[in-house]
Length: 395
Image 1 (cartoon, one colour):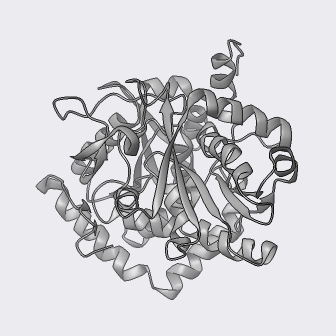
Image 2 (cartoon, rainbow, N blue to C red):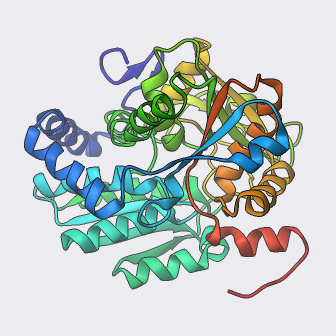
């Protein structure tokens, strides 16, 4: 990262004056605590004792044998408390908010996993919690809405725009403007104005720190590739971060192509987007002919976002990471295949990465390995996938 929160030309702080004080306060607090031994001891203790870290690096033997080629290892973020990688970032931000004297957390959520994680941390720390969720997503992820309410959070359906993740982010930012004194905005991905992309990356980087240690223990060498799904990009940047300087390790982000990148029903930002400014940052965004943020689509509520984090945009620009599109159909096929083959039901978001790994592993030699991050578990997606296959089931 360059100075002033930039990753190459990307990043920055494109926000109204009313938010500048909050962002400056957050940056100063993070710079004060990020290297503080006591803060990091508390956070490590929360990771290990509460979230269940380190998560397992699992050798998917049946998949590897069936597909041929490289050994496939799965980084099991689905085994974390609350069932996804989101808890890593939320525990870090909630602890930081507590140190800052905040008593209220607000968050946006798409698939609901970040909302559940934020509500969980708020309950743990005795804080109030409000989660903004697109009305469309509240229907797709009704179980997670119930979980958030059970944990004591207020869930506010957002009806503006496309009533999905981007609109939830916009509403959360508006809410933060009006309640800066007691409220911390617990942003869920590596996006938004500086310092959020850096803060979220640093808390999620525990994933690649563990992968590196675990794969060296298992294989005695680094993997040929690390593969992760990308919406805003937090699990992916967390999976990539400690490998960025290892040029022999390919970094592959899998975007939600929806019904195809040759259609308007897609959320594959790197593959179809253009440079723009939205949600406080400069990055690549899906836009219409007039430069307005375009509606996007994916079967996955968590990848249904029209932009990508600025560090991913930079890694793309310099050719360090590759971003590939994966369609709904490919992701659903992988969702079913991994469930049947390994007894692991992955989140539909994670299934995008697994779908590409299924094509990529057979192209490599048997003495090589790849790591795929299973960013979350898929019980939340069973109704949606069943509906996609033409079967109606009730929760």
